[in-house]
Image (tube, helix red, strand yellow):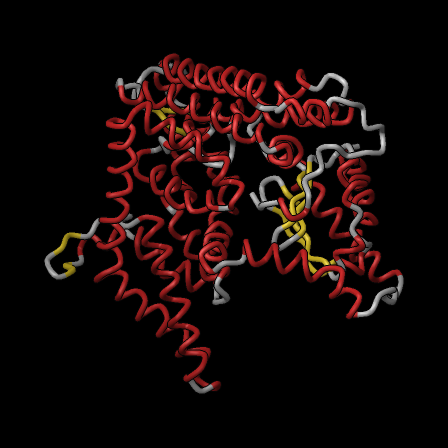
Length: 493
């Protein structure tokens, strides 16, 4: 039945994005089906949003349909199969518009959107995110197992199982540098296994025997940052070799030189530099919360939604991964998760302030369960961002929740998440720290509650002008999408 349901969802989406011949590429991340289109004008946005399985849509360098975690991984293969079947069943249908027509319709919107989001810095952040996002399922699974192992250890239950759980939870993290190197080379157009081979040098136990100009090397020194740098170097060396090595010798010379040159530079330079950078990141994050406390939490929690809106949150992925690699958890994620709590509180306030807007209230009711679980796109792009002021008051709620959690960090109750990806209530199984599990869970729950309440109050009392209430507090009818974000205001998550 679940397969039939997933195929039905894919079948409902396909004609609304222009059919199989309008699709040029298909991919997915944690929550979104990402497709590239030949003709953007063939997409029926309102009909897509109306599908029960669709939580929202986002337009970026690809057209992104938010389906939620779990669902997207099941729907995507069915969607790919339907696209292939559609292409093989009939020859491509001729376009009903000319190239000039397409340019006239889409150029203004697409070029404006790309001008905002395709800056070199944002494109680099997106590519870095593409390296780490495929690792998130393993981080989540191993993180939950690590938490379960810690709980059993503290309770003294099933001692024979504890070493097995420790091995299962730690195996991936001990080799995460290899996966980062592999994905880096793949993302930047080189041979993935060569990137993995160079990154594997970092975690090889034998590096402890190497005298790097009098500097002591340790296995794992530099971590994911070192792996990222080593693999990027390997990409450039390989591409240089492809240009200059004769084709007859390429299969022997190129891999050898790539691994040799990149490996030597990694051992005698990159591992030390990346190790210092990783240590500095860990020291700064812990110092920031231990010293800044409530103020640091307020700033981090209050600014995270704008970072998501601008796509700049992707820069935090390597930082989270580095902290998890060093300390076993990232202290930043529980505080940043408070932004989602402020968003939920703001959406509930909108629901109660607009009792006669049936369409918007229906959108909020359908998006709130995902919001409680930390999936914020439906509420951001369907409710708060298009309304304007509620987006600001949602940030105020996030700031309050972040300040609450940050205060307890300053008081000595430091904790974090053993994986990245989940947020909201879904983060509870991944929490770990220096204090008892009860204190950690209670403080995180308290932060969520503060975020909900402050986000609600700020939005209820300050989220609307009188004119907004007059314009919005009416029933627009079943065919009107009140909460639709104007295309020019959509910003990628």
